[in-house]
Amino acid sequence: MRSRIVFGMGKTKEIAQETRRLGQRALIISTPGQSALAEMAADLLGDLAVGIHAKAKMHVPVSVAQAGEAAAREVRADVLVATGGGSTIGLAKAIALRLDLPILAVPTTYAGSEMTPIWGMTEGGMKRTGRDDRVLPATVLYDPALTYALPIHTSIVSGMNAIAHCVEALYSETANPLTTLMAEQGIAALGRALPVLREEPNNAGARSDALYGAWLAGSVLGAVGMALHHKLCHTLGGTFNLPHAETHAIVLPHAFAYNRAAAPDASRRAAVALGVEDAPRALFDMLGTLGAPFALRDIGMPEAGLEDVVSLALTNPYYNPAPLDADRLRALLRNAWEGRPPEA
Ligand code: NAD
Image (tube, rainbow, N blue to C red; front, side, top):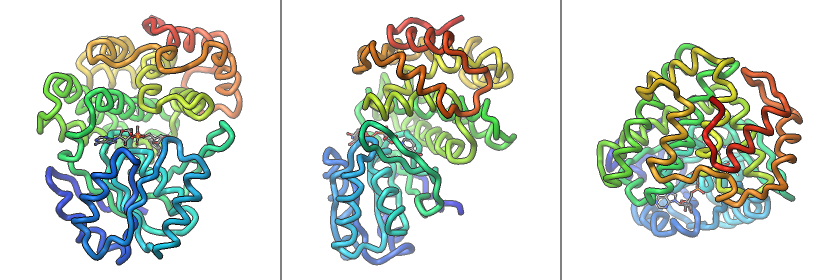
């Protein structure tokens, strides 16, 4: 199953015609913080909108998923319109998984969930994920204009999150020439856009480039398997409730450095895409120049939890180019926790 994609500045104006292709009774989903966007979508949808459910939360707690399902049943929704980032799209996916409803996703961050058939839910400090074609949005409407409102800090870390999908796609076990091309283009687009956005958050070209990069990143995330970096972030996010995009931004240089020698072609391709010599080091330096956090301890990671992350990373590990070694993982996490540069 593939999604229909509508991409372009101002394309939100086509939301009603896109929704009508999928259903007649739309429940609009957002986080509480983006209820104004949900209301704007409701205005544009007119009679097609049967409700707004502005209760999405990061990592989709099971109780939030159940409340979303009840809201969709109550208004007899036949389509879900998810306006927001990965948390909003994640809630729509959780509802779609239960009720088999089509999703129109209108992403406003660079997280990439809109392009994947992957759902996730958290309960009791553990995150469960799975793949199911029912949760892949039927239509994705990318409008860079909606990302102007994304605070610059969130834009930067969310962009680094997207770069992480591309990096791991380059050394994925299931990579193919097309996903490699997309990953390279994604890194290049985001690598170009983020420094411009830092200076000029409303630069139209850079906002378009960043969302284009995010589209590519989400596409490869949905198409090929991820590795150590995603396993670590999944554990850190699910178990310690750390902010998703910040966690990805901080861990990426370290996980990439861990794999650098075992994945020389991926390292070279990422370096060329970024126009640098050493891609993991350049990504670490970008965190500094772009004003992103670079220490896990600064985003709420308890030092005492590091050893649990090592054990969890070694339990049901994902494929990874470099063998998983407890001492190397410990050193990786220690560097990321303290905010030191990645291993040379
Ligand atoms: P998010 O959706 O939690 O958004 C972060 C914050 O930014 C929220 O408060 C949101 O309301 C606000 N926001 C979003 N867009 C905005 C905009 N344009 N203007 C102003 N405020 C805006 O964060 P995220 O990083 O997009 O998503 C993280 C979640 O997505 C995690 O739970 C992660 O696991 C999940 N995710 C899932 C997949 C998948 O394939 N299933 C892929 C990527 C991420």
